[in-house]
Image (tube, protein in one colour):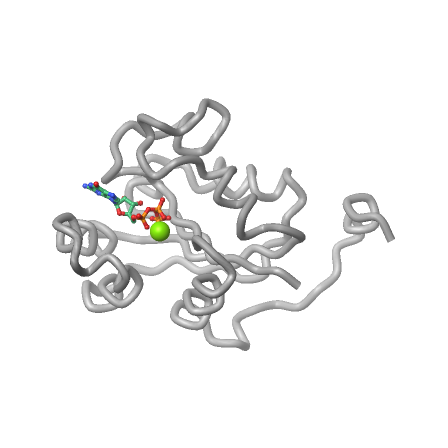
Length: 150
Ligand code: GTP
Ligand code: MG
């Protein structure tokens, strides 16, 4: 089963976009298997964005991610890592297509409302960083038989 880590950043929460973002993943057919709201510490934000620690915007990015509540989620489904990134759109909303979450709902690269894992390995690492195994719920959805061929 394929899973990805998705987070609604503090700007998405403050702008009242939690339901809009969840709705887009849910309507696509993906299954929500973990969710919580928390304000990460700066140290935790730095762990999450560790691969960007050499970038000039790293400090500001980690300050921002830890500035308020974040909605952390795990979504499951066929192709969810790659297609989840398509739903989200390009990193800078200036380049995100209309129809994508960032294209429709954001303007600045530093306030792009949502995070999604960029590959299967990253997804595993981020899920392990944000969630304990027992926080992931294993369940079937009746809609799965209408979403997938046998
Ligand atoms: P995430 O899903 O948040 O990881 O975004 P991404 O994978 O599309 O981009 P990346 O991992 O390269 O960067 C992480 C975050 O850093 C982005 O979502 C932006 O909020 C921020 N960021 C990336 N590039 C820039 C930049 O050039 N300037 C600023 N201010 N922020 C940036
Ligand atoms: Mg990234």
